[in-house]
Length: 449
Image 1: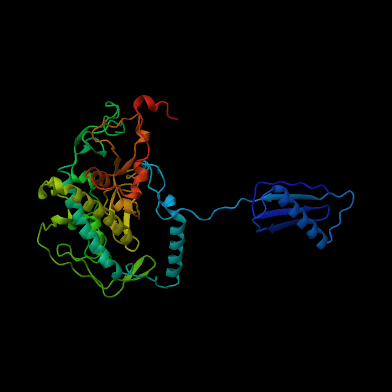
Image 2 (image 1 turned 90 degrees about the vertical axis):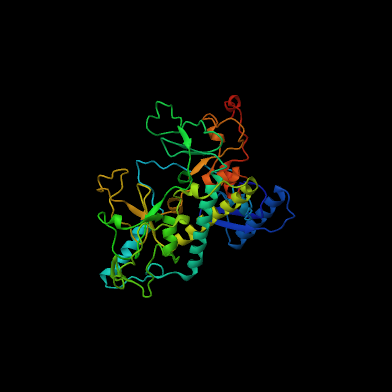
């Protein structure tokens, strides 16, 4: 017998295999003793086990036969992992910029969408109604009504806080593209892709920013009955446009006299994709013309709220940051149940079971679709965009340079404003802001690998 032994390190688990001219047997042996500290002792124990196994199964090798024994040691893996390191890594990549000449990826895998569609089609062919649960059947989810009210209250605090901080924290916006920068002066990073950007070598043209540059105006049509008649291109002016966050909260149970909504007591019935019983049609109540809720809209918010006192700036920053996190948390929780659709080509959002038919899309290949939107399931970032900006560490230092762009971090514009106003940086935004990276000088950047 010609033994062959391979040891990869100390481990309580030993794997062995016999191979003869007639048999090939694999054998696993686990040794739990912690007193073995040398490879010689472990190998001798392993060979003894191998011979016992050979005698037990009566494996006799002739003179011309060859038996090989291979032993290896599997390293022990520590299954205990630090959850904080997994959820909050040291550094994370900056958010990718999706190309405009391409459709957005589906948030739900296309294979799962097709499987669900085929299952609904089979039930419709058999004449079986689709089993719907709230809120898919038009009824409210009682557990989510308090969440909707919390989101509306946080939305009001967010608008008020940002309007007050705008009097203290300077915000700059590019007049040629959608870039926003929070700081005393605009940065010098050459990332502008607006008109005539080649003549400016991609430098931005900075102007004073407003609250609509911070909270991007993502609006949706308000419908009295989301399961009623679809919005057509000719009737689009018959419906009000309100923030998508507010419309989501209204459909989740928030009662606003200015924007009434139908509350069903009987569920709707669907056969496949067709609604066979929606409980009749009810005309919406007539409201006075030009009725607006100023607290829920960013229109002229800077004029409605005056400059705060210097001692109140830090408290306003903390409350604004908490309201921002509350809105993101509540929108994500509501969207797990209530349907929100987004166009796969532009920024249009519609809150409801299906999108509208207004032909307002002017993005990639809109001629092929006659201006219609390519509706798909929306994400939280599409309903409530974070609008990432470059993080400025030293407000009194020089402006950010393109040469040092890879050393800078990013953060949502609301978080950046609150941090510069004195709020504590939330833990989950630290990796993206790259606070542990030392920014070198221009001459030192060439020496960094």
